[in-house]
Length: 368
Image (tube, rainbow, N blue to C red; front, side, top):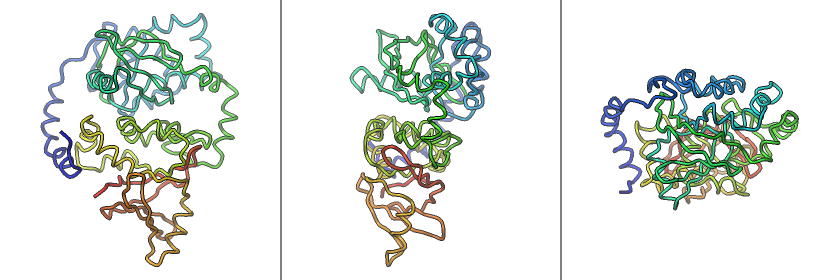
């Protein structure tokens, strides 16, 4: 059943108590390596207790990712076992753990993390809906292919290596862990780009771009490649993936994207985001997300100039969804209005991309 926007918001609000009750009765987590896993502890707190994931924990510490994976998420982590790391060519792990190879290690580890809480049953439904293979983009920018091998969930990396999920649905307070039997690797050129000399080139590519969500934004990377690194946009990235818009927003464009923060999504009525992420509401989700995308590369300066030049003080334009948006300059600040008349401030402007520009906003733009 597909819902209208208003009915989705109402249903989400009404269903919240029921969902909360269901969550309080979640079945016990599977053990990992003989160790209990607790749903009220985060990914790091549980991982350190698993005797079959000691290499992974050491790598996460060496890469400086402990705080990130202890954060609110949600994250889905495909967690290789010690045996999986041991199966890599001799000396690989020792090399990756050296300080000078931190960027390469971070690239590999973040290729195991998706900005979503994806339980295996939901993943299986997406695989079936996509004809047997579902692509997912990780926080590291890697594209993984999820499929089924009989009753087992498989994950294929960018080099064609196939990992099997050996323990699924280890629920965490900030997401879920699926234990896998192989290490997932980025494509060879991506791994090479993460070698010790790469940061200098990356710094040059960043240019004058502002940081977003504590992460550097690179003008030679596309909208998706940059967005997945922002800690403030995990909900937006999850929504884009669920809507099947990754390929579109990785394309040549150019696009202007008004990017709501996690806080902006959290300000919607309780349960709204979960409702929109349901497969049956994909069309509605696409409609909302594309109401944040404009064809062309439009700077904040241009939007303010056109708004100030208008007799009404507003510059009116259309999103690729067909929705009407308006820009207004108030002093040095730029505000974007949706079709319902809600106004949201551009908090970070002119984050240049290889295929357009991102302007961060503090609200979600909704169609009528």
